[in-house]
Length: 186
Image (cartoon, rainbow, N blue to C red):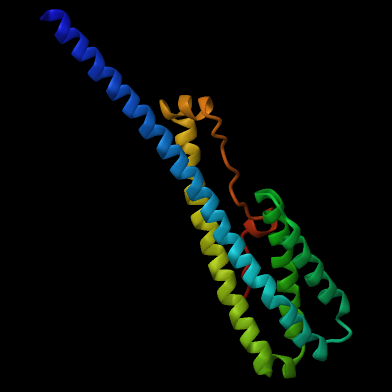
C-alpha cells in the first residue's frame, strides 16, 4: 500500500511538472506571436503613411517646384521604409522618413496658397493621425517586447526559452536627435 501511494505521488508530481512546462512553453509562444502581431500593426500604419506620401508629394509639387531636393528626400525615405525587413532597418528608415516629412511641412509653411489648399490640409491631417497611430503602435510593440523579453530572461521560463530556441526581440527605438530636450524660447 505504501509503495502505491509513493507511485501516485510521483505520478502527480511528474504531471504537475509537465503541465508547468507546457504552460511556460505556451506562454512563450503566445508572447512571441504577440510581438509579431504588434510589429505587423506598426507595418500596417507605415504602409498607410507610405500610401499617403505620393499624394502629398504630388500636391506639394505644384506649389513648390523648386523644392525638388526635399521632395526627393521624402520619396527616398519612403522607399527605405518599404524595403526595410528587420526591426532595426524599419526603425532607422522610419526615423529618416519622419525627418523628411518634418522638412517637407516646414517648406510648406513658406507657401500660403499650399497651406490653404484643401487637398494638402486633408493629407496633412491624415498623416498627422497616422503618425499618432504609428506612435501608439510603437509603444504597444515595445510593451509586448518587454513582456516577451522578461519571459525569456526570468527564471524558470528562461531555461525553457533557451531550450526551445526563443530569442529576445529588439525594441523599436527613437533616434538620438528625437531624444534631445527641445529648447523653448519666448
